[in-house]
Length: 522
Image 1 (cartoon, rainbow, N blue to C red):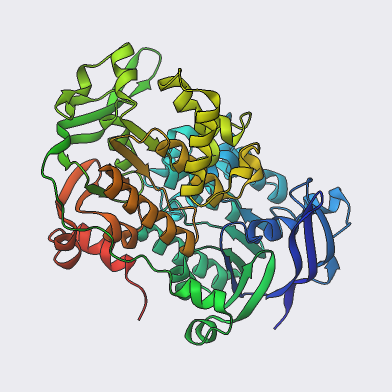
Image 2: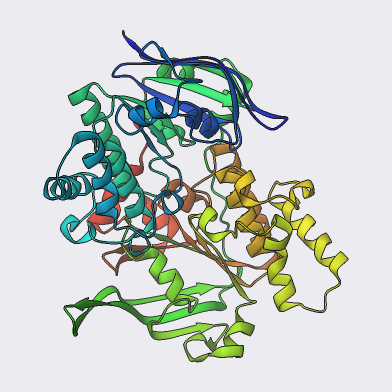
């Protein structure tokens, strides 16, 4: 089998800090290779090294593309290869997409640059690619800006951009992180179809071992910048030789939610609806409903899991419940009407609810240190707290989420995606709120860290009586943590009830479809 990519003895370092050491692997034409490992293991640095995308990384060793050495090659040659021969899907679409350009324009750019398509042809191809990656109403969404799309839709736009020029190698860095299970299956099927049609090879970077089992031919396992094991997927999964690989395979989420002890309602909502106003011409407009008459009740100390496909209204519901966007309906926290609060009263109430956003890179200020980011809430809501006590609280919460206090003076860009997510969780936890909205809080974490974070959230819930609104496309995670589950589709609740009942005896066809897509392959 023809070897498209050969990596031998690859070393990468930031200054004096070595992050990848003597990594070696190969990718053949038409082959699907998965690169797995914990957050910070060097997966993304290795992938970016192939096209020398990070100017702050010093590289040595060998990266050969179709026999040509890429390390040290000129920028002009790299620009010819990037996007045309080797394309990349980045982990965080909100930071990878240009916020000033419509998604269709960003997809069309590569089509015009590398394939010579005119504007009309490029737009038509952009619409086709968006539709093929699972975006409904692609003819309208092609003119959307990134902020107007959901997290999953932005990720699919990134995938469409990467596939536009039919590259020979697709480097996919967590390409399904923000996607629900049904769309994950669609994307994997799409990538497999394209691979068969064109002989495209795929280097698939992920922390989801279930996806590796479904998709990849071979797997390369990294830890601490080292390749610790590699081989055929079936062989490695059936008989792993390295202890770390065995640890990864044993890290599936376990049921943590216990029988509820309290029935006192922490959060209630009745007939919550949200619409977005869209302009039609110079003076006209229309209201587009995205959430329709949603009602729910969340008791103290319990977790409500909110599931549904990308664009179903999950995040919109969470933002509406916590008064982060305008909504109709009655919303109450501990009996107090949140929908009636304004100004200082609303700011005061926000001490009691905190949010962990889906995209940690976009939600963490790049100009502030970890200490400043986490301590900001304490400075705002407890301004008389001494600086030494604030530092102690920040250090303690960092330790709770598995990070070290030595990281306090560092900035978000110095961390991996999973580490940034833990910083975001620490920022929410530091005020010890009554209610937390967790929007895909474990989507950027590998299996071992995901299990640790879920156990952390569970222990904090038991210790402090926290209530969680837990939004996730990962049904294994929802089953582990949720007491109640609410299933959304097209802005409506199609099913709700106790978690065990939903998972064991789903009533609605859409719920059954979600569960079927989430089942591991036999």
